[in-house]
Image (cartoon, rainbow, N blue to C red; front, side, top):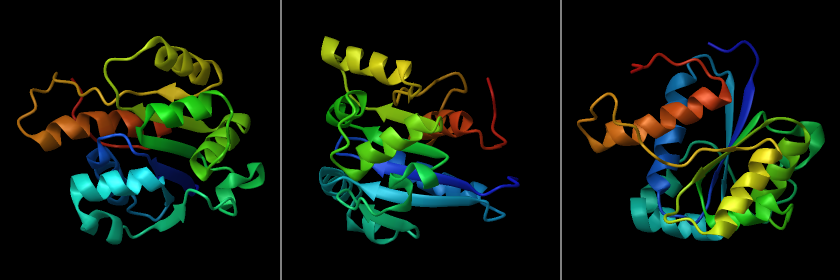
Length: 188
């Protein structure tokens, strides 16, 4: 699949939609047949609480990847000399979006975002909010102008999804497309 190890950080914030993070991690594990993908996880404090509420304790306890607390600035990817190849914030709260958009590196998620942007790596924010106010839109603009990708958790219906899994995976496939991993999926 991949020839070089791809370092991917998945950050989970307090927005509703923890199921997207779970499915992304599971899917990346499935794609990682040759161990060419290294996955690290960051939970914000609220992200862990929301994930436990939405998915139960098992999700947080059964992740088979290194998990970093949001206040751990000693994580390797907090430094430009060891930037992740991609940071996916899924789901991305509007508070996290705002801090990233304004360069406030007050936690590991925002610091990792700052690093991937300055090192010209991939930043994908899977936002979960509706409706949007002008502050949200301006923050999305700032992140986009800085090189990030705003990828709202908006499922597609071209393939006539039959299950919730189908709906969720339509978002996950788009995320994986944007980080440049090979995948064999149905395209409309």
